Amino acid sequence: MCSLFIVDDEDTIRGTLKIALEGKYRLADFPDAESAASAAQVEPPDLVLLDLGLPGMSGIEAIPVFKAISPEILIVVITAYEDVKSVVSAMKGGAYDYVVKPLNIDTLELSIGNALESIKLKKEVQALQERYLRENLPCFIGESNTIRDVMEFVGLVARSPDTPVLILGETGTGKEMIASAIHYRSPNFRGPMISVNCAAIPRELIESELFGYEKGAFSGANAAGKKGMVEQAEGGTLFLDEVGDLSLEAQAKLLRFLEEGEYYRVGGTRKFTVRARVVSATNKNLQELIGKGLFREDLFYRLAVAQVELPSLTERRDDIIPIALHFLLEFNRKFGRSFGGFSREAREAMIRYRWKGNVRELRNFVERGVLVGKGPEVTGEDLGLDEKNFPEESPSTAGEILHPLLPPEGVDLAMAHESVDRHFFREALLVAGGNETQAAQLLRINYSTFRYRRRKLGL
Image (cartoon, rainbow, N blue to C red; front, side):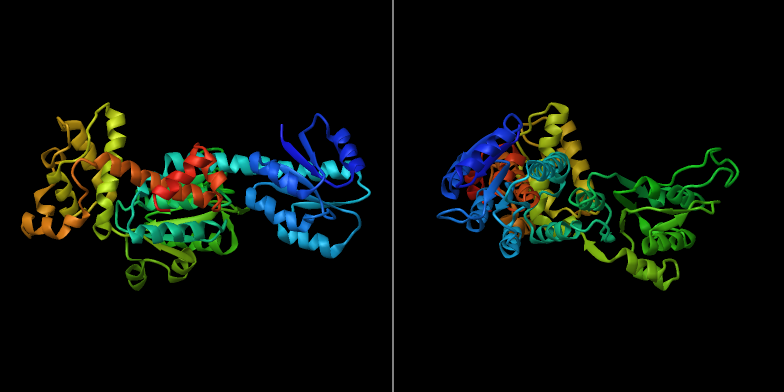
């Protein structure tokens, strides 16, 4: 049952409201804003019915006080007359709605119902985003400035429901994970995310896979026709991986969809309209393809309204050990192993190694090390790194140069947990809009523990 504070200096109004709302909400009433704010510090309510004409602290002054306690508190203000100036000030200050005295109980209950429905929707959003934070984002553990900048930009881009985003980066840098991060942080995150690997679909079939086809469109077509992936992405995100492999014919149709939100199925004459954000990715140089006439320049500019470029793993070497330790913890759980970390030799080798396959390649080698290693640490031999992908300088010289990047002996797992904690704390604060109470709830820890850990992590 939702909790509701009634704040009004008139005993008769508080009494009338308590009788009208009894049994529907957990009620508490207060004659002034000061006592209501004190009670909210102990247990924040879901909603406050707040009279503007209070003695002492006015209702206008009380709104930011309640919002400072918890931004999630919804406020419906009560005014004795239709004072437009006061109502505008209250709404600008963060009030959800207003009602005018003499109170009409039906109107008031409608306002309360609408406000509490918005709370319900916010909680559903938080639950879904919390699940995503737990299950997906750890792959971007890291403290390098490059990744911090990328994730900050991703958070900004994601706020739009339909801005096209182009993700560039080498194979294995995590382009699909970035696409997922954009989707789940966007207003569309409750909709589907449909992924299409453009390089894996034969060119003669890509149009029908993307846009669908009508019955009898071609030999062997489904008798009932077929929905395309664009249509399946309605209300969500369409992720086009390896978009540089699209045929020019498919590019033309995609451009029309991006410009007008409309398309035709193969073999059809009926126009379809779909609302979905298009996120695309490629490891190819699209400008070179444009120069060769293999990619449309107008399509490039439509796809790249916002552009994210992912650094290679060799460009973020200070993230290699934290990422490897995350994978070590993952595979310890998966295979029932208990490795305590990596040997110094293994750590130095990972930092020196040329990771041509980037994070994906690192994950594969850590998995191999956990499978074949005998413990108590994963050694360089367990990893089995390919000798030809090491630089030519001597190991001793490389070790001296890279020494500051190597964690001290015996603290591998502690370092891994701290890096994971820092990552999750940042993501929780981002989703919670900086509100510590809500961020603590997302992380399923109490507020005091959250404040303590945040200070320890230097956030």
